[in-house]
Length: 67
Image (tube, rainbow, N blue to C red; front, side, top):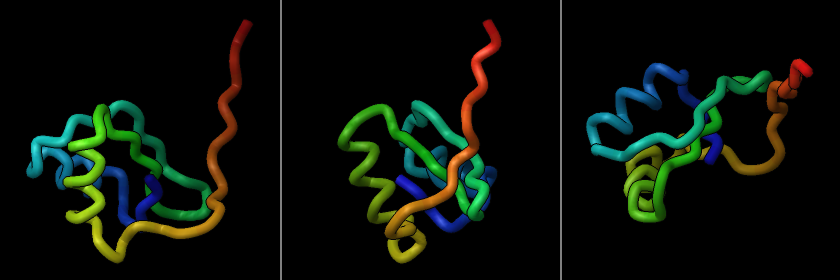
């Protein structure tokens, strides 16, 4: 999910709610993209983030694969 808060704050809030993070990245458009490890954690964090969940398309950092 994409949220309009800084990555460090996302990590702290997930730790507070014992929600394990699978992947996390800072968004170019501002905010953070976070993927939780399971549905229960995701539902817990949807409630915790509340109105800070971003709707619509966001600009993500492209991954560059070194071969």
